[in-house]
Length: 353
Ligand code: AHG
Ligand code: MN
Ligand code: MN
Image 1 (cartoon, rainbow, N blue to C red):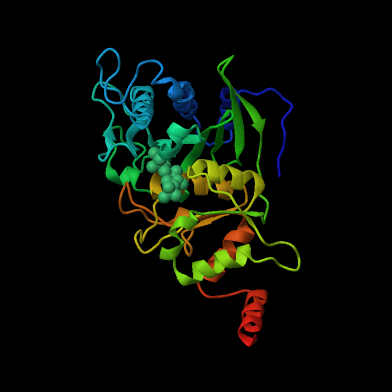
Image 2: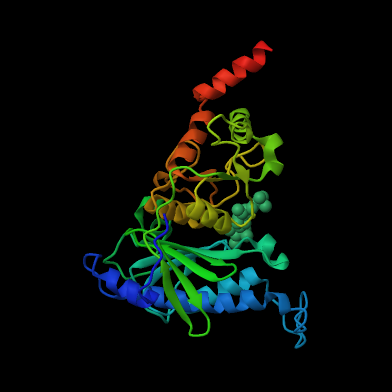
């Protein structure tokens, strides 16, 4: 359900107003998000220019000045690090682009928050002008009264303990989708004034949708019950609820955003060559799962709630079934072999022919 907004509210004002909802709020979270928004503005600018790199003489490897050119993933990573490392709000960071945890430089103060991020999601789509994104996940450190360096224990927390989660779509417009546990709000960036303006608030995902989203190119490697589920979605039903339409961008936040707005299901399942799927638990599945649950949807690994998964590695992967509650529950039923009556009946009729 989409709640169009008429009042003019910037994200900074929205965060400040929400601040009073968080007990013991000190304004530190607002300042952390202010720094994150600077990074997002800069990445949005760089993404919008990506197509011009060749024209501007920035070729693969070195640019006209003979400087080493970085991939947009690395540029986005560096931008977030440089915006976030000195604010005094974080005790440690983790990024998809850094194998190791990222400490706060010794010259800067440490704070009570932990930041994990996927600086550039959908890298395979950068060169073909298809939507890409940024994903971030924020926790309190597990030892809030301690002011030293953060540790692996501060990073490896289950998603249910996230303080905030968000993703940015660099699409037809730059939109930030964000939650601190009080519902999901969308802010659209107006580059002419440099502000993120509240454009939709308290998004609720429909209980069912008409779209399924999965890379069917992997279907020969899927579990048999998953194959049955996907075939079921493609089979016309008397109530016209099926067939579903397939939509697959190949950028998780784009597929997730369409699912949030229209309903349906986005999946990156395990398969024979990827026993844990492809998406990373800590900085892809967890933030997306917090957002979808805050919008009334469901996110599991096919069996367990994503936000309850106890992480054992910063870059660990998880299968992901996420979207409308009715659709995700139906997928889970197929995966455990609990087929709906109309499916069993149709199979019996086929066998009888
Ligand atoms: P990233 O660019 O951060 O590595 O993420 C890419 C991910 C995710 O965005 C997307 O859903 C998935 O890769 C697509 O994978 P396939 O190309 O295997 O479908
Ligand atoms: Mn990604
Ligand atoms: Mn990435």
